[in-house]
Length: 266
Image 1: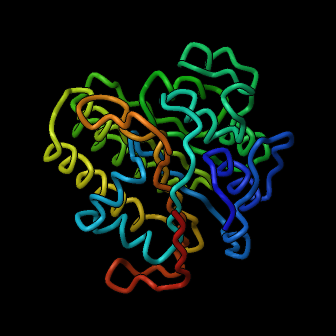
Image 2: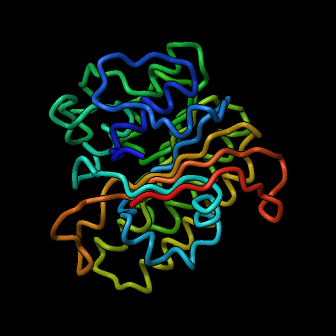
């Protein structure tokens, strides 16, 4: 497998959904091209670095099962800041090409992101994230769920999960959800035990979402950057995030999840 970057996520999803995104910096991840997925759920987990995932892997029941039954990649992070990284994940462009560095620049940008392109192509799409970020998509896509970042990390992520499950009931072809608990915990200066608790909470939410998605859905989990605050801040490269790709092949739940593909690259 070639080196994979966050900018490869958007073209991978676009190809799976049969929509066009010309002029991208990224390329589709070849290993999933034969999966024939009808829907895509993209879960962005703030501060979900590759090293952090590997350290917490034994405690993350659902996410580790997705990784072991799918593809796990240590993907190159294009930025150490949230807004430009998420813009790259959703546009397939490097930060110097999309020039989105905060919510304000996202709102005035003329760059069309993946949910907008999907919606304009006639595919129902949903974005569930922090309120200011979700507002960028008002009037542009079908389903928007905004959560105020004034909530505690655990309450924020619980609300993201609830709104994601509500959105899945309307059967979008593409859904993007964003969990913030790990990042919030590090910015609060809390320790490894609290980071682990936040990750386990997100893991449970991922399990709920995965149980609710339709057969034939590609699940993609991706960090936006490694930890960039507090005592566990990564201060040198390589800057990599956990990227997991998995296809739901049956309607059964976790106890009977099928093994269909296994590949890991560091």
